[in-house]
Length: 276
Ligand SMILES: NC(=O)c1ccc[n+]([C@@H]2O[C@H](COP(=O)([O-])OP(=O)(O)OC[C@H]3O[C@@H](n4cnc5c(N)ncnc54)[C@H](OP(=O)(O)O)[C@@H]3O)[C@@H](O)[C@H]2O)c1
Image (cartoon, rainbow, N blue to C red; front, side):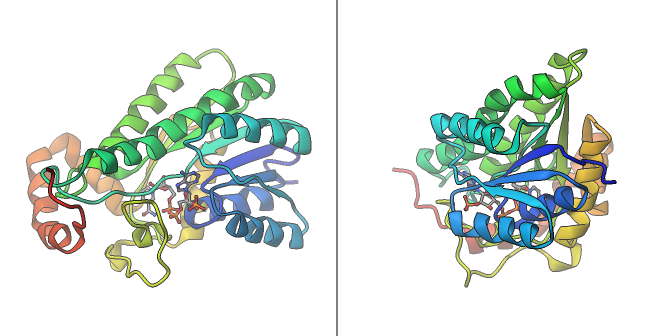
């Protein structure tokens, strides 16, 4: 018997990285899984692998920025899989560039996908989750607690996710639905190969420090455990926990540490044209 036997789980950003690994993990624990993202071929691969292993999975291509499409996706999942018990707003990417140089367009796209995309998912999943007294999960980042150079847009988007998630937890009190806001540290995925336009490049080198990176399946395990336990907020990787601790107890030290490691990165990866 799996922990999620017969439950319907919807994961955005389910075609790669953390989302695909969570989909496999939920499916292994008995869930019927729907995966969403923009690239239908990647979603089909994930769904087909789950089906090949004896599970039930549905690929539901959707751009989370498109609210009507998100609403339609929820309708399709309920129709095909019979309801909705867990919605994981995981789709996201990272815009890099200094505050001085990053354009409004880049800022807007970052906030559109990471913040408004998650809000679309939450708003349209909640009516179904009310019926199942289910779970919603938002994927933030330890970047919400640290502010290295060239990371303002991403950190701001994840700080917004934290505020939304914790507020939602309070608003849902007594309804039987819970919200789990998850802040990963570095995890192996494709996020480091995605450009400021949100486009994946297979040949792009991930600039993140490999030594600090968790394996994707290990991350999915603790994320699914946190959602199963209806945790309010969950931070993981040892380094991620340390960042959050330092942000509370020694913010000056944390600022000095991230500033020390980041200038190289900002020069190397700031592709944004100067503001007019
Ligand atoms: N890996 C880490 O170290 C780390 C650390 C902290 C937080 N996170 C967060 O974890 C989440 C998952 O990222 P990941 O690391 O697993 O990276 P990833 O492998 O690049 O996965 C991100 C997924 O989001 C989807 N996505 C992007 N824009 C979308 C849009 N507009 N509509 C629908 N789907 C969209 C992508 O699919 P399509 O391109 O097909 O749309 C992709 O499958 C993100 O929110 C990220 O910020 C990751």
